[in-house]
Length: 484
Image 1 (cartoon, rainbow, N blue to C red):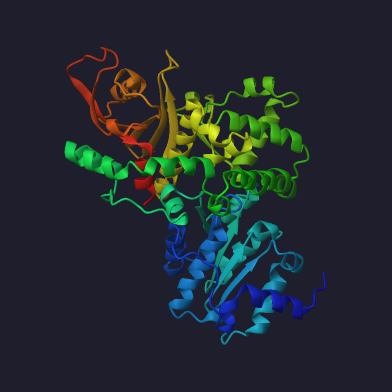
Image 2 (image 1 turned 90 degrees about the vertical axis):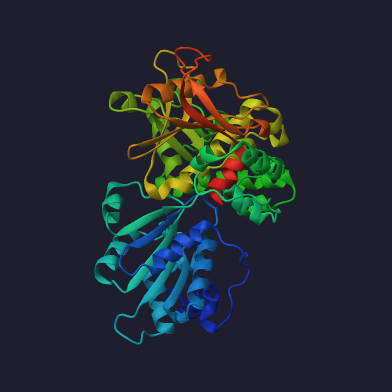
């Protein structure tokens, strides 16, 4: 389409105020952890790979790019060698990527044949055949660094093949609990920093008592976090009803009704909504596809499996396989977590009733905790799974993180009752069968914040010989430490 250059120039100048010496406005005075990761990529001159920052809609990817650009300008990078463009803008979407780049080069002709330049391209999925373009840039223009954002992952085999060795993917989840506290300007208690939760096994009783006394006020804010979620704009709303309406309209509806249709050709939107509602109702549960198809009229097995893939690609869900090897994994049922703990409550119109329903509150806590563990250890390429005893399905471990030979089992018991050894029988059995010395349980009661010595699950709770130790950690504190 023929677009007047003057209009294209105007849009680019608006998106790139640093070209004319103007500051970047409306940026928060604190940075998310992803800013440091993108900054590290800009400073890494040893790699030619592009960067793909992926995450759900409205999660803050654009802000991360703009804060990184602010750092670059402050570090004396020539302003005109940095381009930001977002391709969900109507004019840039019509112009396309090549015309946009030519307009930039016409505004600021390069002083050399191949200047060092940094391109920050937002919503790259709107650019046709963007994977081939990135491949060409990486292969033939090493002095041009390309960073992109996308709200939908490439699914097709050709896309994956183009990406091998050409770009690295950085997932950006919703706000962590620590980031939420910063966003809401909550005063943070004076807490001892913790490099790893494993340090708790070295603590004394007094350490647990002092930390519990200081951190107890976090509980109320943590419950608000579970209700409001980690999407920045809705989380800032003072009105909870408006916050949850924004979650439904801006996050869920636009992904289900627009992205699914635009990028993946989905036409049966009603079926998409049915399946997503089912997942919200069973958040943190083990998904049985035959049961789902029986309960949702008109949804067959293959349709359900296809839509689960799409939900994962648009960053609405995480899926975990059962722990083990071979057929028990391939034939096992997936465990499904929503991308943010607040989504089920917002979609099901629960409001504050979520806090009064122990099962749903426990599921929200488990979802929030998983997201924090996933984010903290993603760079180490962990494998996440869950475990159930083959003889007694009631004995299970909610989450298992495995990094190489290291296996870390975690149970979530978020209820207002003492965490007894009997309640931990599934975790104890897993420790015993696998010969693992340490595990974790995420709890509600601050009085139970401690390390427990646990005995054999086979010989009973009264066994004198301990088989391992379990650190019981209040959920607000665990999520805060994992995200600070």
